[in-house]
Amino acid sequence: MSALELVCPAGTPAALRVAVDAGAGAVYCGFADETNARNFPGLNFSRDELGEGIAYAHKRGARVLVAVNTFPRADLGLLDYAAREQPSLKLHLSVQAAAANAEAINFYADAFGIKRVVLPRVLTVQEIAAISRDTEVETEVFVFGGLCVMAEGRCSLSSYATGKSPNMHGACSPASHVTYDELSDGRLAAKLGGFTIDNVARGQPAPYPTVCKGFFHAGDYRGHVFEDPVSLDAAELIPQLAEAGVTAFKIEGRQRSRAYVESVVSAFRRALDAYSAGKPIAAGGLVAFTEGQRTTSGAYRKTWR
Image (tube, rainbow, N blue to C red):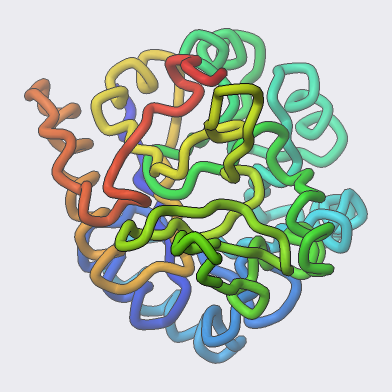
């Protein structure tokens, strides 16, 4: 059985070191500008910081992957340039491309020589297995963290509400546009760009207002539009995903704390080592690091409405 790679987030140089020390096989990060999809204040790397981080990781046997993935501005032209001018680079296709079938993936492989694709979080395990049968491109899937939904990399809801595009400015639901207002009935409204995304009773924890996880009313029904505000945790599905042909398991969270990185990376390092050794995987111990202190298997088991 080939080794499965654990791909881990680093939003800062300190987080990179923590991820490497916790057992990351590869760390992904981005520059402090609009070239990456986590362009938040106080995050990301200067050129010098990234150079130092690469040296730290390589010395300890880990790889560093640079995310240049704000899609409209880093589009096919960038892939074409990289393929022509830097043929030694191993090009990975971002989830921002939303390549969710073998035909799309094979197009990118034939046209630009990509070697790995990060699959959108909209596929079942069975669909991933079908993709693996029809392409030679390595597949990487998310196994923990925030759960973006529907056609990833194509979000216009957040940019409508805030004027900041996740795809062009690298900021989905930026904190600068978030407010929490007390309503006349005592409930607390969580707003994004002036739009009420959710509201909760007095004393209840208010979720972070992300448009795709907002509430709606339909008759007597009140529920979330696409997916509840919970986190993805697919640790128990590692065996099925590996058997489906997945090459690498990705943890989301470049905007997360060092404590998050250390705990989540360590837990998944143990999970992958246990799987490789034929031992049971201990899952479910990361609830403190999840949204709403709840988890979901997302689309892997196709339980969406």
